Length: 58
Image (cartoon, rainbow, N blue to C red):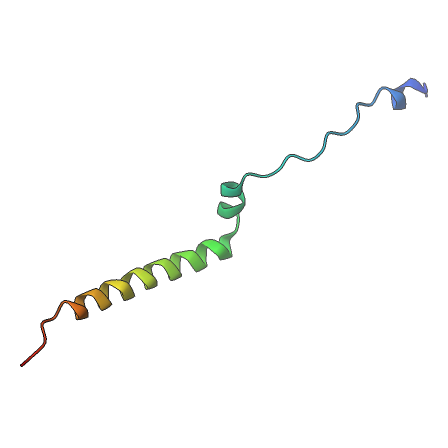
């Protein structure tokens, strides 16, 4: 085996940083949580606004 085979290797580049959106979309449990939590918060806010808009009885 020639010795230059081992010497001709290029130095390893540092690992590339994974973009934030790719990390977010690669996590199925986070997507499940967000898919349940966001509609829950929106419908709760909508319900509170509806109740607040009902006029008071005299």
